[in-house]
Length: 77
Image 1: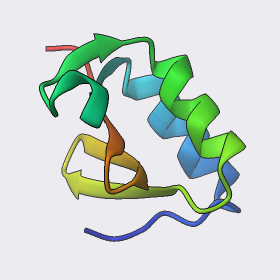
Image 2: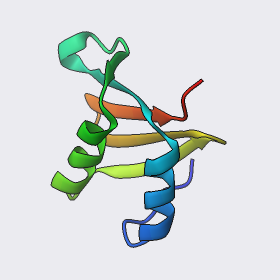
Image 3: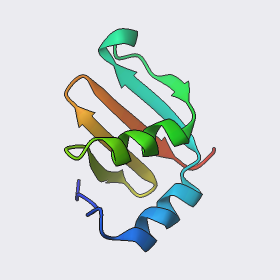
């Protein structure tokens, strides 16, 4: 699960364009996938300097804010 550096702007823009399905996992929702707007996930990446963007699979990306909050992004199915 390689981390995608924040300074790879083109790669991040490409991911944001392709990965339009987003699910949030958090302590508040019992870590059950809840659909959300991808803008929320990208906003969290921009807001928190410690958040990381990683590639989990071919077309699956995760924005990990902390242990109790992360977003999974993928293309529509």
